[in-house]
Image 1 (cartoon, protein in one colour):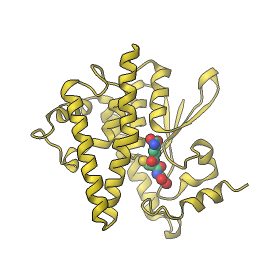
Image 2: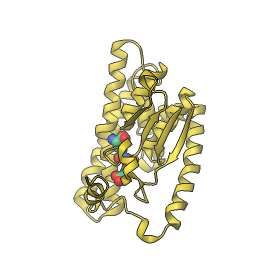
Image 3: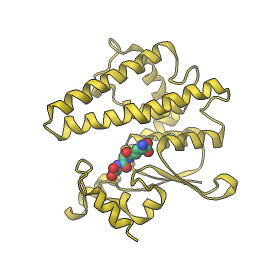
Amino acid sequence: MIELYSYPTSNGQKLMIMLEETGLPWRHIDINIRLGDQFSAEHLQRSPNNKIPAIIDTEGPGGKPYTMMESNAILFYLAEKTGQFLPADPAGRYDVLQWLIFQSSHLGPMMGQANHFNNHTDVQYGKDRYTQEVARLLRVFENRLAQNEWVGGSTYSIADIAIYPWCRNPASLKLDASTHPAFMRWHKAVEARAAVQRANAMAGEIRQRMDLASDTAEADKRISLYDTRDNLDRLARATAR
Ligand SMILES: N[C@@H](CCC(=O)N[C@@H](CS)C(=O)NCC(=O)O)C(=O)O
């Protein structure tokens, strides 16, 4: 059984898709990042960086429970565990690994910064810098897909699973078939997969449940994900010896 400690953000959703794709038995344990659950002592044991998602595989390596953080490392782990969505040949594997790291070190962080500056600040410099960088990265991605059916090459892989939730809504990224035809072809193919559709539906339900919990919680329990000034103190309090 895979226990997924998460919230259905893009990084959470990619693991829901992978778990549905592989057919592994799994369950979702709500970590409400809008209520600060990521700073609980229990969650920090699973995810020392106070983030979601994390997993516990109750039958990990050697048949023992195994705990992991970092969504793309988890994708890699689940791919190796099941022998799915990661090519067996070395070149194919490294192709997938490159695009997996492209997602976690470029696309994800830059989209996060663009969202922050555009929707939560008045800082024009930050808005321009990150909006332009995201547009550039999406052009890199379009160029890749113009030459390959899937991100990693000729087969659907964990690289597609890692990137898709970040691009679920092409219109919000100003992408369409006239400017990004290869992306739109890929997006349609990903969304045609039954596991992706199941995971998307589940993500909607889980988000509704968790957002209701945080919206109805007392005001002093809620935290703003866009105001990180108290996060060092939160971490220090939770890990004080
Ligand atoms: N590189 C990490 C990023 C994880 C991450 O940034 N998680 C966000 C939600 S998508 C989070 O937990 N935010 C809560 C916080 O920063 O307090 C991964 O891929 O797992």
